[in-house]
Image (cartoon, rainbow, N blue to C red; front, side):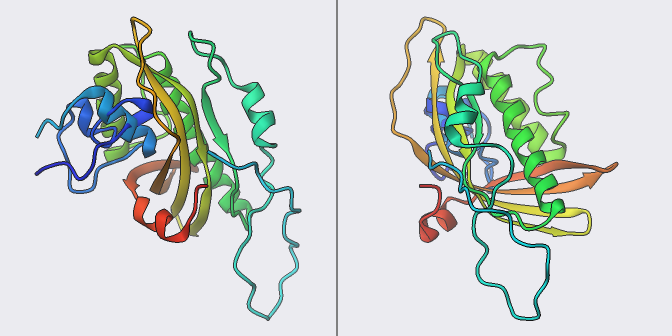
Amino acid sequence: MPCPTVLVVLGVPIVSFWCAVSVPCRSRVLRVGALWCCLGAALAACGGSGSEGSGEPAPSESRSVVSSPTPTPTSTGYGSVEEQTAELPRSAEGIRTGVLVGRAVVRTPQEQEVLEAWRRYWQVLVESLMEPSTASAGTSEVASGEAARYDSDVIKAFLAKKVHLTGTFMLNPVNITVSGNTAIVIDCALDRTVNYKSDGTHQNRLPEQDGQKGTLKKIQDTWTVVVNEENKKYCEEQGGGS
């Protein structure tokens, strides 16, 4: 089945970041965000951001019988985008590389835990692509099932193409819902990554909104990403991720 769109994962044309990586196309491509899209371009043809976090105070714990208004971004403790960027490591090209948290809608301690697990998942993935290695454990420590398998394929694709990731991937989770041991994250992330080849060449591209829908399961008291799907249409309709 032909790939839906060309992924430019982290600056690399990967038919939707994943496809270009020579990874078989799937009906619902696990898209490591635009990040994945870049990958696609960088990996070839199919084989088969951001604004600063809001400084608003966290909502009061008091409850009201009156229905609450639409949730607004709240402080999540990660600091401003500038502060987070200054803490990121630099790639071999001297580019700050890693994951940032922009705006975020978090209403409960549970949702904060899910957000941190989601952020950690992306951070581990970006670190694995920043310096791809056959010894890399990939995202197995923060993901399982379909998500872990697909991420492993992406890392192998980077290795085969001799490219590595640079730049930032900024998360903008607009909705986090928790029901028992399952959580859903709707994220209108902003992908500002670029893939570099071993000879120093790279493909310039504009920042891209990367809509994601992540499903997490609580396994042995730890939130783990089990599915990561593309959700770009939702973000485009909502005007999120900018």
